[in-house]
Structure formats: C-alpha cells, structure tokens
Length: 471
Image 1 (cartoon, rainbow, N blue to C red):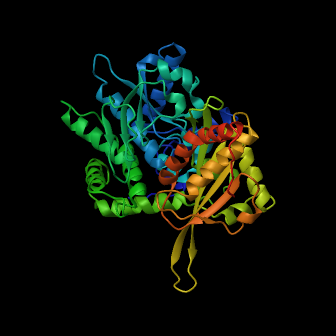
Image 2 (tube, rainbow, N blue to C red):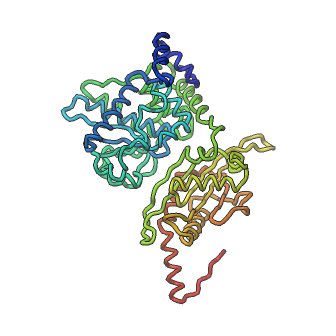
Image 3 (spheres, rainbow, N blue to C red):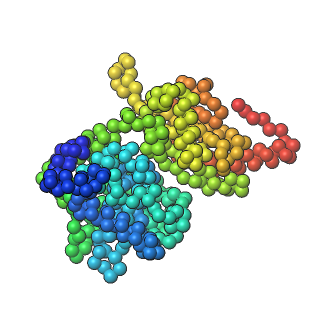
C-alpha cells in the first residue's frame, strides 16, 4: 500500500508512463510547452467534466441549476475531501433521476495557494488527478462575485464549517456537515449534522455509504476516490490513534477500506502508513517564506457590527507551525521590523483590519529532554479604508483586553520581546492547547461590541463626566 512522496515515482506506475515513448516524443515536438500530465481514471475525468459543465452553464445563464459544496477557506485535506465527496455523491446518486442534481465542489482557496499544503498535493497526485489541481474549482476561478452568484444558485452545502462566509450569505443553505460547534445557522437544512469526530470526512463518507447502500443499484466508486477519503480521515485522526479519534471514525474508515484496493490489509496498518506519509509531507514547509506561511492556512471574513460608523470589520486568522523568532529569520533582513512589514503587506492585500496569527512549535526541556508545546498569539490592528486611527486604537484595546481576560482559562504571557513592539501590536505566549477554535469566538465577540464601548466613552465625555483611562 506504500505511497511514494515523489511525483516521478507515482508517474512510473501510472497510465502516462505506459504511453509509447515515440508518441510522447511526438507530442513534445508538436508543442512548445512540455507535455502536461492530465489526470487518469474516473475520478479525474468526473472532476474535469463537472467543472467544465458548471462553467458552461454559468455562461448560458443556468447557475440556478447548480449546488455548490464548499469546505472552509483554510482548505486543508479534510475540508477539501469532504466537499469533493458530497458533490460526487449528489451527482452520482441522482444520475438516473428525471431531474439529476448538478453539484460541484468548491475549494475556497485560490489556485496559487493550493501547493502551500503539500499534503493535499500528495493526496491528489496519488488519486491520479491532473497536475496543478486543474480538475477542481478554486476560489479564484469562480466566474462571478460570490455576493451576486450566491442568490442565483440552487443552493450551497457547507462542510467542515457551520456558517457561510459573509459573501455567500444570500445563498440558500441546503445541508451542513460539521464537526465543530453548532452556531444555529440554517435550522431548516437537511441533512444538518454536527458531530464531534476527528474528521469531517468521516461524517460525509458515512452519509454517502448509508445512502449508497439504500439505493436499488449502487453507483460506482473508484478506488482513487476511496483512498482520498481514507487519507483525509487518517491525517485528521493521527492514523486513528489520536485523542480526537472516535468509534465513528474507526467504523467509517473500516467501511471505506472494505471497498478499496486495500481491503485485504489491516485497517491500523493502512491508516498508520497514510498518516505517516501525509504528515511528513505536511511538515515539509521549511522552504516557505513568511508571506507564504501567513497565507498557507488563512481564514478570514467580514464581521457585521451594530456600529453605524463601521458596520463591518474584516478579521483574519493565520496558523503557522513556527515560532515568532524563527519566522523573523525568514524575512529579508531577519529583523523584527521586517516581520511586521511583510505582515502589513499581506494584510493590506487581503483587506484585513484585525489580524491574529496563531503560532505553535516545540522546545526541548534541557533537564528532562522532553519536548514541550509552546503557542503564540500575535495581534495587530491596522487603520485603513474601513477603520481610521482612532477606531483602530479602540479596536485594538478591546480585543487585547478580551484576549488577556478570556474566560477559557488560557493564561497569556507577554512575549520576550514585547517591549520592542509598536502601537497596535502585541505578542503573547501560552502553553495551553487552545487554537483558532478557542480564540476566534473571543475575538469576534469583542469586535462585535467594540464600537459600543467607544460610543459610551464619547457620551460620557460630552456629558461632562470624568473618565479615567487605566493603563
């Protein structure tokens, strides 16, 4: 079952490698560009055909016939696979119906950022997809602004997140599959499943298998597709051995394995090998520069506030597996100022008012030799198009206070170079396991009410009351 991490090794066993040498040479002579590896097999062909059909129907004004299945904007392997899996099911399960469902998976990640996740590239390569992810629809390939396209669609399906980005909020939400907290969005959606499992793909694959087995005649599921599902479950569950793993993850993985080309192998062995290979690829990001690290796992959205002055604030989160000190070394000048210069350029491009960078790394204890997990939180607020300097100052103070006085029990300690930071910049360290799922609700709640604090202070000042600002 062993996969090769090198693409040339993969091609050596593919249909492309079996192409007669003379034909390959002829193609190279006729074309100025080197021959491109086009995906082989049903999975790749279906993906490309679906993408083509969607774009053709959009051109013909038939967007209303389509359902878009979308993962979250972080675009990890679980989110990507869950979206592809449900789109595949909707398409194939209704293929013989009078009115078949037209469904396509959307990766809410621009194409230029896809290879920043080498584990995704490896999994798709092993599934014999076309090089460069050309088989799949990405965020920068949507032919119309989501804010206008949303209302034209038949609807959307959310996987691996329970609330759509603001730009998709005019779309009808048909179904939700998520393994995070239920925020109460779209109570009428069906299926609407929120379940604590290691991988969202577990939920989607289970629903697919249950529906498939209930059909009068099962549709075909090719082995590349099944192996992609196993890959997503494996990397999110630590090969079914992490503390997040549930009985449901194990049960669904076993059902998928039984239909795959690896059906004669032990589940534990298959999942361990998949996790080892994909995790190794995932960690192979040492050559990425700071800008790529910032955008590699970036999630952001506009937050509506009750403020008449600033009705929306743009919030972005980056997750980076390097310490602040190591990230600084990746800048051109290897200096603190350059980190914030690169960061400012990226947040300006992304149109972000408030940015949170969540760093994590390990340090070895000199006495015990054991590695300790350390995390950092980097807060910056910029004054720009939506937020002026006075508002940015107030926003920074409100969010900083919310983080430092959080009710989640996370003790934030100022970073060792915190005294060198400029206004509206702060860095903390902590040793808890808290990540984006913990900090995002804290920040969003603070942002939602920040202008209210400013207005109350302004009213106190204009009414003649004495205001004391505590530093």
